Image 1 (cartoon, one colour):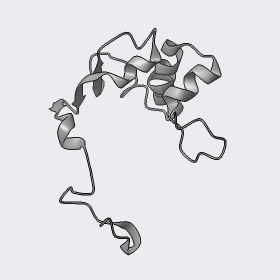
Image 2 (cartoon, helix red, strand yellow):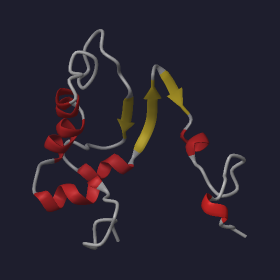
Image 3 (cartoon, helix red, strand yellow):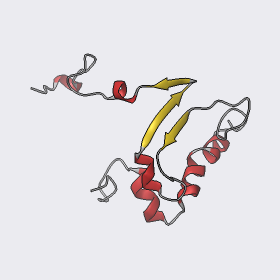
Image 4 (cartoon, helix red, strand yellow):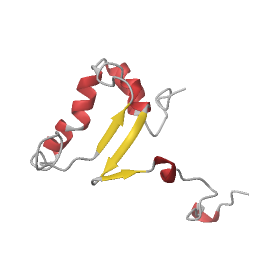
Length: 107
């Protein structure tokens, strides 16, 4: 079940919203990159792959421009020029930096 399945849901999974809005996958990708940069006035810095621009990249296994759900298949993440180990990004209650909010216990 997607995060978008209930009107009372507080967070939305954009991959579930896109099919519901009837926009094409490539339009969704463009909205999240090129158009987002334009909205915040950063088109000269990021938003498209061009020489001299910042380039944080996701390498996707599949064709996300045709099948938006292929965005689940991330094979490589490059952030500020460094390849990121995605396993190190996973955060659980057993992580050394984990601190429960408001004194709640996870035992």
